[in-house]
Image (tube, rainbow, N blue to C red; front, side, top):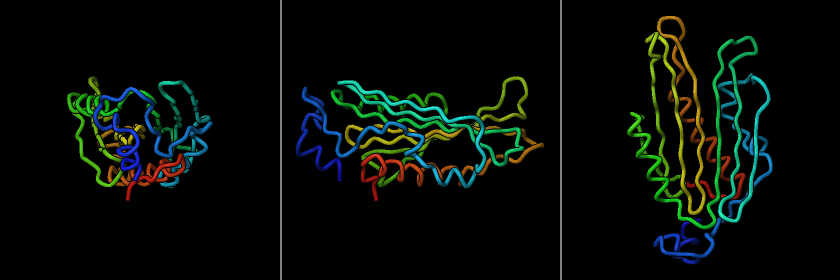
Length: 197
């Protein structure tokens, strides 16, 4: 496991007192995260694409960052689309655990429903939010997001969509959650991680 390596070689990552560089544990930066992250399960749910995916990768002595966003639809003629946002960060100096915990607490304050995910990195959870529109309560804006921490890496894959009650069926949240989990395991493996069991 990546974490076992980090415990042995980088005690500061465990204690929070280290000042040296953190061990990436096999993870690496890729130039185009959209290309690397195939998201094959989401591709089955949303075979059509709207526009061109956007990506960037940045490198810094303290933090490497990879990002991808794309808009997807069920069919080319579909007027509604869903958004996918993906980000992976390699923390080189600062232990990411406190900020990861703060992110989870912040989602809770925003009334996300949070469920832990076992056997994925050192820590992972899925958050879900159903946010009705303020002017027309029949419109529901949905977000489902997966956060993972694995040693010096933090990772996020987010899906967002909408529906109008009484006019369009709500997206199948179980299918979306499974796509978040299965595609994320593939992405983490593709950038050099073990991705859990």
